[in-house]
Image (tube, rainbow, N blue to C red; front, top):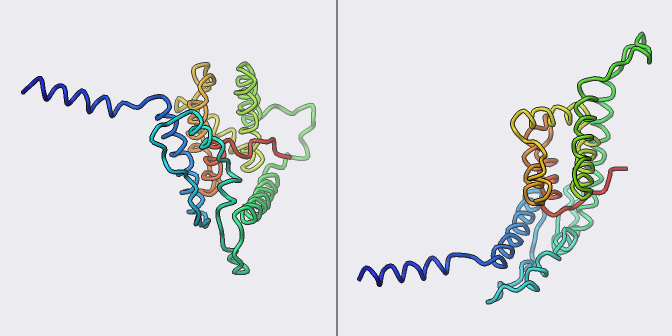
Length: 232
């Protein structure tokens, strides 16, 4: 009886153990579902079936189909309401309006921060010393450029995007507080893309005064590698 139970237990455990293809397939499904969930919280409505039916056998081709589902593909199957006009928009048109609104808000935030950081007129150029913000950001740039080109470029664009949206002071505080909490870019992280993306996600928790929407959009960008072009 004991041998029979042990044999059945082994069969159950063997079924539970996922193959590499099954793990990657599940990961891609989770990525898409998380993207849809965040988009729905921002008012997007998904009516069409986006995620294909799970095949009986998970092949590399099936995984590729999921990997090929990009943000624009998802927004293309969505609808959203323009609350100012009541018009029903396509997901892509709604995304364009969302980006314009974010850009205006970011420009307004930068203007306010620049007005606060006015240097005294009596301070000469010769007497200028690097500030805490300058030192932290400069040191971070030097640090990340010692790694491979893919990782350093990704981190550089990520850093520039946060600076352009939230200002240099808040970005420096994020870098400093995150490092003090133990979040540091190492060789163990940069050669594992998933670990690198997890690092960038975790660091956003140390970004002061960042709105929930900005953090959600950054999370989407990190997970699906969207919008990583350098800001103009």
